[in-house]
Image 1: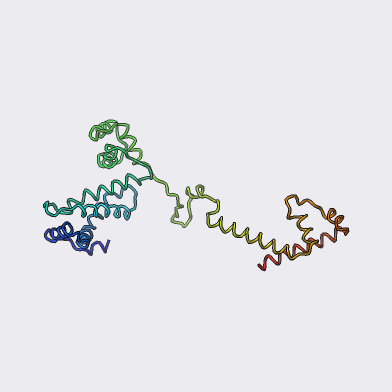
Image 2: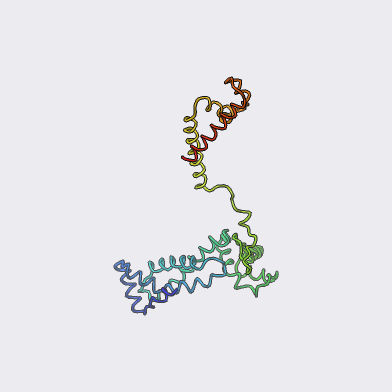
Length: 265
């Protein structure tokens, strides 16, 4: 806001000269001076739309687009100041932005509904709910159905709920929709990290198994590493003609070696 106020206003003669340079020579420097000298107009108009709950910075940005469109079409020889000509374009861009984004729903579609959307608040007597007679009056003046007036009033009076938790004066965080709307599944980066970890562990396990002797590798595979790893200590004891205790010792030693190798990797 301080930067905008630093740009000086133009006199009628300066504005006409700049407009002529832009029109005849496509002088972009002249266009820039016309734009920055009217930025405070955009801010002033944006303040009138703050009641719709949209960020003022976004409204100003959209208004600036309208201002640039006005400057592009400005004809200094018509005897109309740019401020009067630009107001229509600035408001038009802000109106379109509000209709597209307010409450993230398409509030108004027809020309009459848009007129109702932007005029209902000013036509109401106070903040109370509309009486049937008021509904009929507004519907008649704006050429819409009474049902449309009532529906629009309901939308305008609706309150949005913040997804984020609110911190009260005591520093406690209140319950908010984000607590139960949050997706607890891993994010794409976490998925990638998990996959990379699993791949590294698989490669590390394969290398560790290769370092074992044949009997130790056979014991681990039969006990843990095959799809149908159901062999018991006694089954393997019979296969290698040793005691079950000896198979348990081989298994324990092989598991310890693999753990050490994978931690070192």
